[in-house]
Length: 226
Image 1 (cartoon, rainbow, N blue to C red):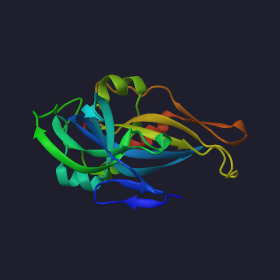
Image 2: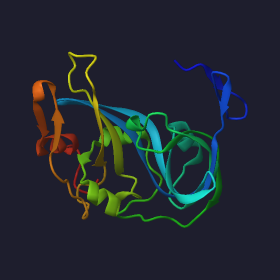
Image 3: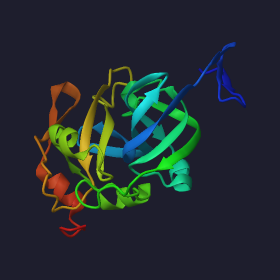
Image 4: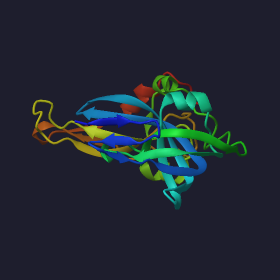
């Protein structure tokens, strides 16, 4: 159980000591929905956490590309988009299995400067919609290689941490974890590739294969260009 809390300086006090936040600054090179997926054989559900910022800049005095998770309220206020430079403070995630980002619990987030308008076609780099829009659109599986090659800056791409509950009847059983990539974008996107069907392990070594009809069902309410 966590003992402690946040103080006015953005420090987390844990059992008598403070964990200082890390300072960061850099240019956003991609912003996408931050969603957690839970699977239990042929069933699944999503937890909508906020947004993921992919930033090229400096964190903890090191220059590199890194990812930061923010909540929906911050995004609604700042309307962050690709090519905007930001600064702030954050902490490393406590449970990497439950997050697709490296850092979260952001404070003092501020816009340093605004750059040029990002791409208005593939990859789409405008202001991402509200999380409810992603939920309503539905997603298709997206090949991991295609995501890494074409989709890391696109507002319709998403890389989700996945928890697989192998056996609902055994609460002491060990769950499994992985990352999966998805596309919420237009169905006629020219770079889209689904990749292999995903498999989900169940109890007694049973395996559920999520076939193409799942993606079709998730997106059949949309036309090709939306």
